[in-house]
Length: 184
Image (cartoon, rainbow, N blue to C red):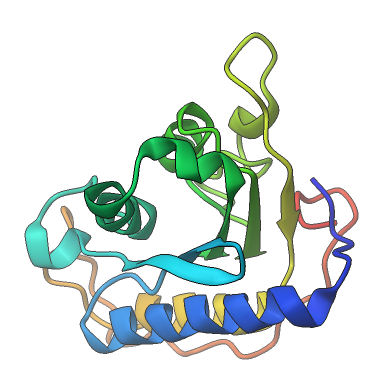
C-alpha cells in the first residue's frame, strides 16, 4: 500500500466528492462511507452505505456505485477506472473490485476491523487471484475518521445488536499514522 500519491490535488478533488457522499450517509443515519468511481477524469458512479435503510449488509457504498455503473457501461470500463472511497474497502468489496479489475483504489482511513486492502487482509494483491490493483491510503484521513466517530457515538437502532451509547463522548484527537499500519 502506498501512502505517497503523485498529483495529490487531482486525487483530493475526487476524495472530496467521496467525503460529501459519506456526509450524506451520516445525515441519513448510515455508516458514513462514501465513494466515487472516476473514468477519464469524470465521475461515472457514486455511492454511500445503504445497509441501515435496506437492512442488507451487502449494500456498501462500492456495491451501490457499481450497480449504477454496470447499468450504463460494460464491466470492462472498470479496468480504466479509479475508486475514491473514504474508508479502506472491506474484504467483500476489495474482492469484488479485484474481480472487476479496478485500476486503482484511493482511500481516506484504514478499516482496522474488516479491511481488505492491508487493514486486515491483502485481497488487493493476494497471489494467484485475478489481476492485483494498487491502493493509496491517507487522503483526508482525519476527515474520514471523524465522520466515523460521529456516527459511532450516536445510537443505531438498526444495528444487529444495538449498544447503549448515551454516555459516549466524541473523541477529537487523531493520532498520527504509525508506519506499521496500512496507511503508513
